[in-house]
Image 1: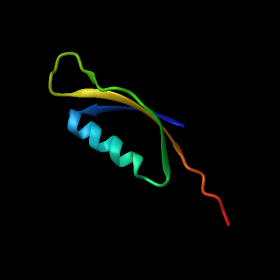
Image 2: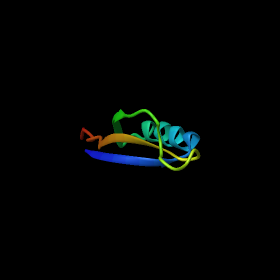
Image 3: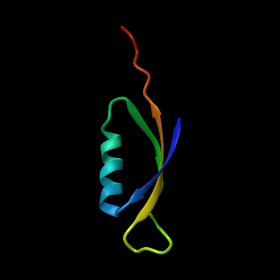
Image 4: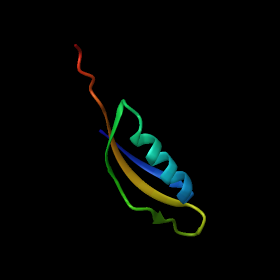
Length: 58
């Protein structure tokens, strides 16, 4: 499992989380709300937990 801290604009954070959710090798376990960063009103942060999907062999 990996715990990721993402930082960027709200649009980019939402796009990346959506993209992560569509990757067949990755399972998004949990994602947080978007939080404001101190000192800027342009960039935000969020946290995501992911894990590698184990492929079953036939």
